[in-house]
Image 1 (cartoon, helix red, strand yellow):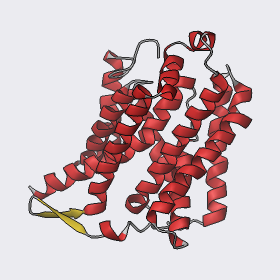
Image 2: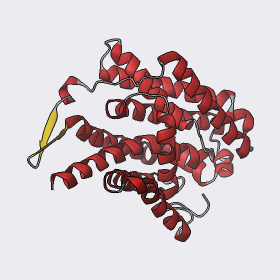
Image 3: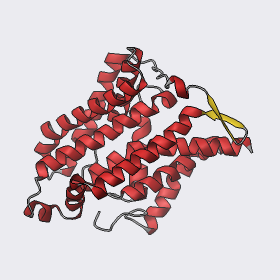
Length: 286
């Protein structure tokens, strides 16, 4: 009983982390049609920045804010200086973001070295919590709550604000959005910064669970890709559902049959795509 409850909570915590990572990826892909392969690197940089700020004594909250702001700024520069010049050339955009992800990995290795850097959770959440008579890390429970709150805020942002209306208009029909006066240039930059900030936020929040280490980007990017493809490109609700599906599949797969973990992880995605090529909640246009 304890094994199943523990793995269920671990699955929810991983699903929450994937939601933070993948929602930004889905947002960028849904609006800009760019498979931003720097997203894993932004997640990793968020973890490193959070570790650096926390070690400097600024506290965990400041570390999370600094990670989100730093990655948002980096994302804005990438969009303005690189991707803007490659508009309409999806192959070049993919190759450019892939190259930038390798450059970011090397820079992180030079700056922070090859050893994993642990990120201490806030002291309030450092201990275990009692769940149905079992002990479970309270920080992982907090990650679930933070991810759900972040998803709710993002949903309200998209559904209840002027910026959200513009983003949805751009996702649905960009030429028409331009025709009614929406500034696509500023919209693209805003969305890219928001997506990058979510990746950095995910890295900072995931720091106490995963630590910051070289290769973290390569470990997380495939999971984000699977989530976005499974949920449906451009669908944040699909991303929400797929994040927790993948969280459960990955956690239980590695715990029960570690030798077949990738089979268990990728096989459901392949089956879903075979019958629903647009993903669970994606549109055929995407």
